[in-house]
Every structure is written in C-alpha cells, then in structure tokens.
Image 1: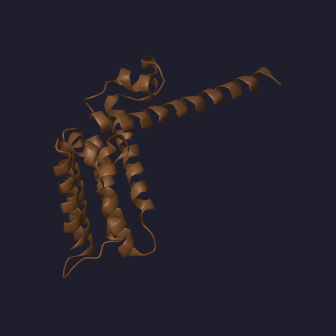
Image 2: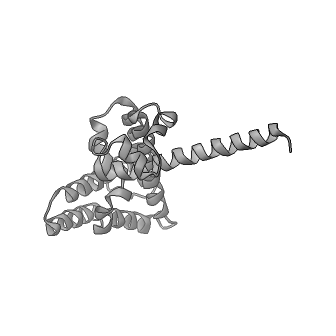
Image 3: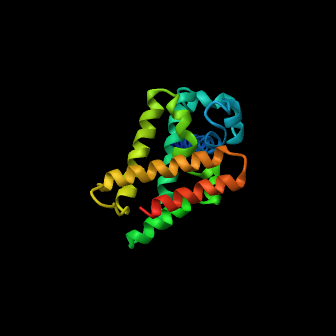
Amino acid sequence: MSNTSTKARAMKVTREKAEENRQQVIETSSRLFREKGFDGVGVSTLMQAAGLTHGGFYKQFESKDDLIAKATQAALNQSREQLSSLVGKDKGASFETAVRHYLSDGHRNAIANGCALASLGPDAARHGPQVRRVMQRGVEDHIGMLESIVEPQGDTSRRDAAIATLATMVGALMLARTVEDSSLSSEILEAATKAILSE
C-alpha cells in the first residue's frame, strides 16, 4: 500500500472521528443545557462531560452561541421524535396518549431528556436570533404534529386547537417544574390534562 493511500485513509478516519466528537459535544450539550440552562454550564464543563478537551472546542464550533443553536436543534429533534413515536393510526387514542405522556410525572422529572420547548424556551427567549429561529422551527414542527391528531371543537381550526394544546402542555410542564411541592406539581399536570382532553 502506498504512503499516499495510507495518509488519505488516516485523514478520513481523523475527519470521521472529528465529526463523531462534534456530535458527542452537541448531544451532551443538548442534555446539559436542558438541565442547567444556557448560562448554567460553561464550555469547559460541556467538553469535559463529552469526554473531550477544552482546546478542541473552537475547531468544532464558531462560538458557544453556535453550539447552543446546534444543541437546541438536537434537543428539539429528540422531542419531536418522542412525540412522533406516540402517534399511531387511531388519532383520538394518539392524541390522548401524547397528552398523558407529556403531562406525566415521569416527563416532568426527566428534564435533561425531556421536551426542549419547556426546558429551553425561557432561555431561548432571552437569546439572539439564531437560537430563536431554531426554536421557532421546533414550535412549528410540534404544532404540525399535534395538528395531525387533535380533534377541534366547534368552529376552532385544527391549527388553533394544536397551538392552544401545545401552549397549555408546555406552560403546564414549565409551571409543574417550578414548584417545590410535588403534590401541587402533579395537580398542575393533572388539571392541564383534564382541560385538554375534555375540550
């Protein structure tokens, strides 16, 4: 084997490893940002949690804001996949399943792996246009998914019903996570579930 082909293969492996490392940082950051907020964790902590050195950060990302946008996108993708996995052929059953799963104690407690809209929404609202554009696409995706399974009442459009449902679910989850009393927290989730499913 020639030196040229050996070097080419080594470079390819290095590029593949670099991309693998980059994805590892994005996935780790998506969890840590949901758990601690954008300002609650620094670059060195993120890199260490991903098993990498701080020095490699700027080879992979333009800035922390660049990472925040990419990690937010990864978190939103995960949230969309979780919601999508609950959608089956029976729209009514799918809707109830999605609502009950979203507004469950288990989801409330799984902040690092839970809905990106509820955990990152407040941080994104205070951030620049890059992350807010990413979040807007995520909101639209979730509305679209709920629109396909929601059963609107009266003259309400499917889109309006989907927006109201998403706003109620995200707001209830955020509120349930802010209170210290676990009974009150569960009560908030249960009340929101009843309100959505009785409409």
